[in-house]
Amino acid sequence: MRFNGLVIVAAMAALSACGGGDRASTDTSAAAPAGGATPGPATGAAQAAVTGAWHEVSMLGDEKGYRYQPTALTIKQGDGVRWVMVSGPPHNVVFENVPDGARAQLSANMPNQLTELSSPMMLNPDEKYEMSFSGVKPGKYDYICQPHLANNMRGSITVQ
Image 1 (tube, rainbow, N blue to C red):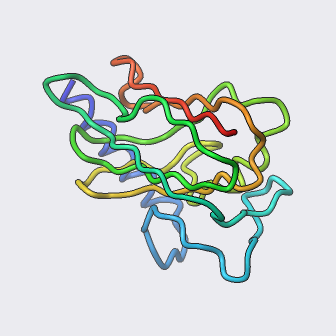
Image 2: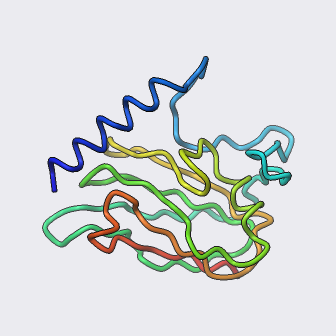
């Protein structure tokens, strides 16, 4: 499994080197948009700033297995979620089974997407990925860690 992780990391590094253009930063955390909303990634929706509380989810891979902690989180519309890479990289957040009508705003609120509804890979301890759930429809949002899907690394966020 460790070898597969290295292959994935090497492939991601090679791919990111090919298509980056003149990016000024590789930070995977979301900055609060100045003055409110900013255009989202080709969805027609605008990124909405966090207006509520922040919640933190640890990304872990150790002798107990690969997991998000907490696995399930209930938040209010407008809150933000911060995923922190703790151990067992690489990790990411990929949303699946998104409630009807929620895809555009969820996507707009996800900065630096690797692919649609997919965060960048986090490789280093204390690396963070942050996003807002402002403007996101109430409902349950399931997500996975793509590199550790075979290890059943899954989580969910219920927006009230």
